[in-house]
Length: 457
Image 1 (cartoon, rainbow, N blue to C red):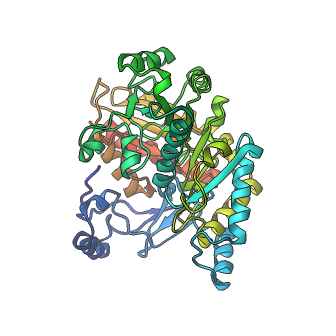
Image 2 (cartoon, one colour):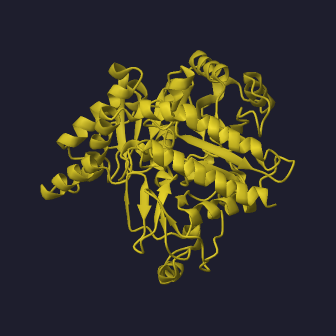
Image 3 (cartoon, rainbow, N blue to C red):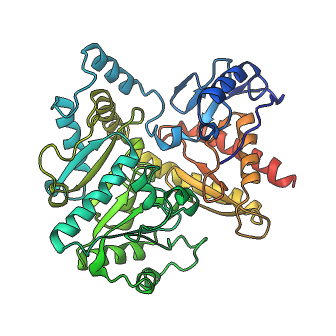
């Protein structure tokens, strides 16, 4: 993860309709906050650009010293309908004034409404149930638990292996990281977990072989026949890219799982709720997963996640044995209901697809200006990423990626820290509601920053 310099730097003044930079960056008056956080938090929390958020609305993030940034982070792909959407704020205000703030798993009206709304988004609503949770890691962990339970109960204890993909990220809790595909993130787990296996992801760049035969060969080399495999899970797009499945591969994977009664799980925590120009990213592939892990953009605000899946898989556990303290927490549920209505009423899923039609070609054009260090550009709808590499190689270049990130921040364009195996991917994910002229302005700012950093090497 990037280390950001906290020494204030004088930068050119910026004042446009959507951006204002009128102080040194980081703001000198903000430094006591960073010092307080340094004393009170683990250093793992210090990995984002040094901007102290004060308020945010739509696609604009502001500090208390008069600076404004166009947001290309969406709060790590949370605020799909935009920051502080008025309908979400109003719904939350009404809920607080009731008040009903905590319910455990005692029923309330919002829980019934939201689970039904989410069920209707599934490919087969009449065969689907929904389990509400708080975080994406909880959602993926429960997918693992449900897949292994279903397979072992139905077919016996030998069908227990869980397959996922290299470079995958499914969360930071133990089960989520066992299924993850980043060795550095798993060192704390030690060794000795043979039931969790990773195979190459067919991204076409880090792994040029995009054939489904590679999946089959990898399992065969590890002596894993399909009779032993309980579930297969993948992000619908890998967040370190974003890297997408080839359609043919995804469909062959689905057919393989169907043939051998293997639970197919799509992790939509990052990619769901319109981000790619479809409600769920897996819709681009024409497949039907058995379980869908959701989070982030489900509420565009408060912590909430969900597992949406086949009723026969979801129903293995008896009453009271698969619950969560804050499952269907009333405020988060209220935000999610309002969020889903906004997505539909403002046609933001379709809007993401439409904006992506011109936005993605422009990002590809910028990448092609410096192909020796901007290794590839991938994306769909309003999510994209550019891999920043050492000159003439495919090796990560986190220093150059961070310099691009900082140059953008100094000009009034905010992104989260570079992600990926080495922190090399410049990730682009504005709110789906971003005004088109703000998106064009921010694109010009991004190109200016890239030109300054890459052109000056």
